[in-house]
Image (cartoon, rainbow, N blue to C red; front, side, top):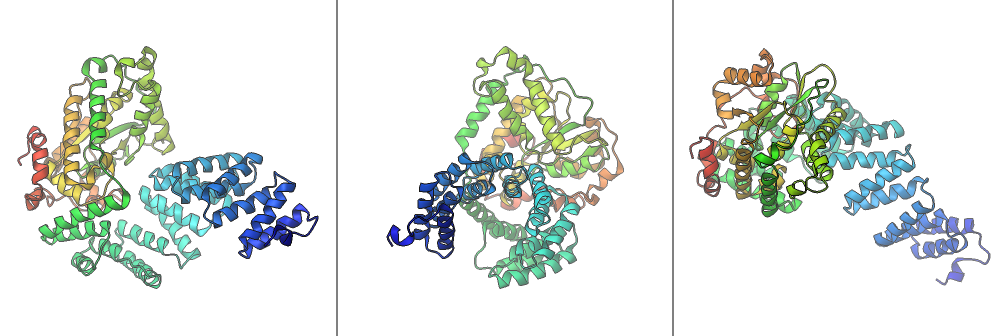
Length: 574
């Protein structure tokens, strides 16, 4: 079509825009582009023309051209919502999540009443495990846009992942009522009910989800097996997974755990290894061994005893609850320890808080890059203020998470492997209780291989990587114990199982609080611990997982060699 055929003489810009929109909506994209281009020739700053051209570029797969036009529209006038919304969505869909997040912040700054970027930012942060911040943006989106079912579902899922089951449940139920044919809210509610130990209700909800899943060409087999695993009918869950011709990485791990329970140990280990390999391949996660070892070396040099002694600790803030740092390798018993502690009336649960990695970044910033690789460049002014800066950042973040509210004396931080930066924690909180949880390293390896986790720089996807990281952290802890003020209370999992009362009393003596009876019945707590260990800490204390590694002695040979020094240092038999 020639340009003259599309446009009669002397067409006004408004007429050209109207015809361009009609052409685009009818799928005549070439005609729409010509009409919008002519409209721009009459008014270069026409946002309507730019919008149509951006839509045409996206329709033909030219994301770069669409992005250029959207940014041009924002530069012309930052007030309209659509360029911000379209840019953020396009960046997110193309996997440029960091840029999408920046675009959302810019959209909110330009129009604080726009719910779309609030929703997107809430979803981005939730997926990145910044759940508290994500929930705040989702709540803001609901306040602006009303109780849209998808917003309710997303906020409910966020709160469920935080462990706030009682707050999440009504949101998910309202979401289901608003969009009864949507599978995710049904599946999420079924999972929540299982987590709350309401197994019959969970099964009924899963029946409903299963009917919908089948109609959509999917299934809920893995979730059904996970529910059955919590009941005396766990063998039926194993049968379900055994009957599946192909399983995802997560399903392989679930089947492996059930095969372990059935005593089918060789098959269980194959599932663990295959499941971890599948998850690694799907996510692209790998353990960067050389980088991690270099970081550990830098930290050891930076916190040499003579240098650490010259770094002044931060003054203690007596006006706020203090953190209790629970350190240990994933699957070592840190969740159990937190559950025991937070069954006390004066201790609030913090869970896996992301603050320690943040204060490491703050340390690098405040020292002008001297931390952690260039200790000789540490300036005197940075040396004198570093600890207080770290303390203030940590407490500000804790306040945003609601952990400094009155009514308790302490809150827990059980992010696994926080011990990497333990000297920074001690500088920021010189009197905070430190609890180091340990368990037989080979039992930890079995449990680590049977669950998905990303802690420890993604070390958990190969047995050898998990063992190397365990050994590295244990060696680092031996270095940290040489530093003044770093003497954590040792809580050995096996000793706790054997002598719960005495170990709990010793633990609370370290914290400085009297033991309370509820701590001996921690499994009855209605608090939900949002970690893979949630089911275990809802059961009475038992010794089933002690010595489990002996079933896998042959498979563990590579780890046994790597962990030989660590095992001996900590007094375990191998």
